Image 1: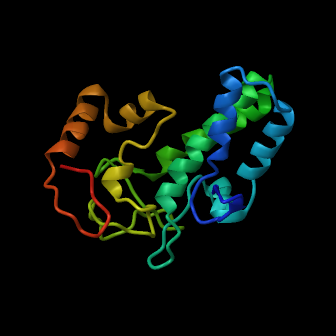
Image 2 (image 1 turned 90 degrees about the vertical axis):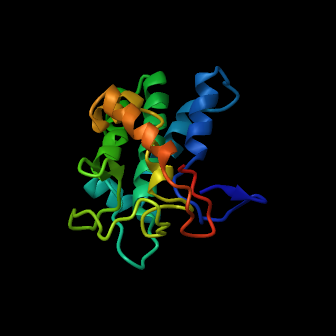
Image 3 (image 1 turned 60 degrees about the horizontal axis):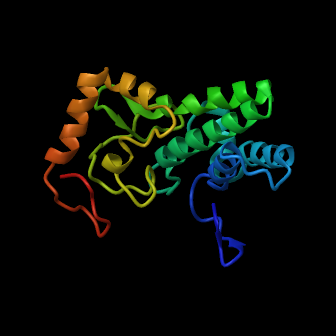
Length: 194
């Protein structure tokens, strides 16, 4: 969610003003009330909008056919935003908030399929959605992207992501696989694999 012409369109996923605020604070910018900013960041993360209540309750946003919820993308992006809140909370000495949001930042693991080695959509019942095609552009699972474009989207815990893939060698193999794919396009959005 981000402003366009000073208006919150409410159309995109995540709450990415949070990383901007946390980054500014980490870089020494102090021209704002940091505690009030953290309060607002926390309130945004704990809101029930955009399926955030489901994320808080079950640790991921579900994907259901035809709903366009972008569950996997939301989960990965919420996890990154949560990590940013944890960093801000830690910098301000708010240890309980830091612990809570560091824990939530690990929710990316809830949408990782160890069998296919992809971040995938899950139903509310906890099953990975089928059929599965990593090049398919599904608005039920992803935002303007496909599975390959979200495969390495754990910006805040690269060592944790590598561990999911089975360690350095397995991760490098997966990264190589990205570049060895055929560059066939399943939709008007360009697939960056291949």
